[in-house]
Amino acid sequence: MDDVPDEARASAVSYDVEATGAEHVDAVLAEVAGLSDRPVAEHVAVFERAHEQLRRALDAAPPATDERGA
Image (cartoon, rainbow, N blue to C red; front, side):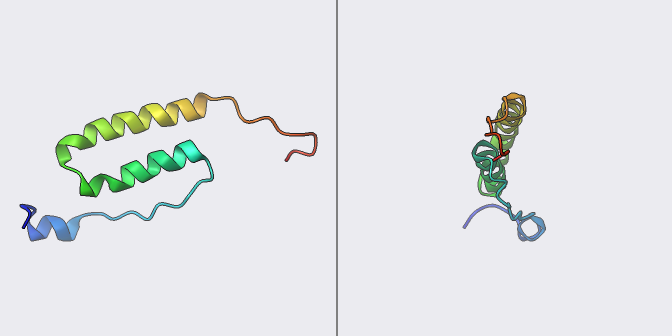
């Protein structure tokens, strides 16, 4: 049996993560969504890593498109 009180378990937030289609962003969202299964002591590192990865994704040049915009 784990040491999480029933009240804490009942109030735990569960997130349904919808895919964005951006592979790097979806990987970050999946990792953050999995935090409820990880010790609280690991949460800060996950959020810091998520912030850095999302920042890189936003700063990256958009993929080139052809003349039709596809």
